[in-house]
Amino acid sequence: MPSQDHRATELIAALHLVEHPEGGYYAEVYRSSSLVQPADARSSRSALTSIYFLLPAGVVSRWHRV
Image (cartoon, rainbow, N blue to C red; front, side, top):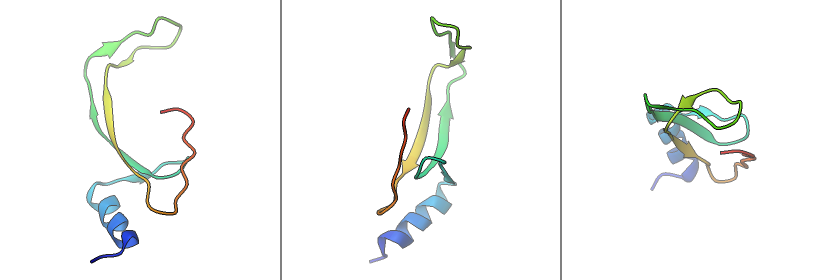
């Protein structure tokens, strides 16, 4: 059975994950072509996005906004 570290390395490569600045690894896998306009002053944005996120054992993530 492969070690956790080896498996995480395999997944990072296979899924083309990149290191997130606040910890872990991610890749955007979908972005909707539909846009929404927030009710405040923010600009329009995609209605939906999806990501893969991997947090290998022993790695700390400090995401403050998801």
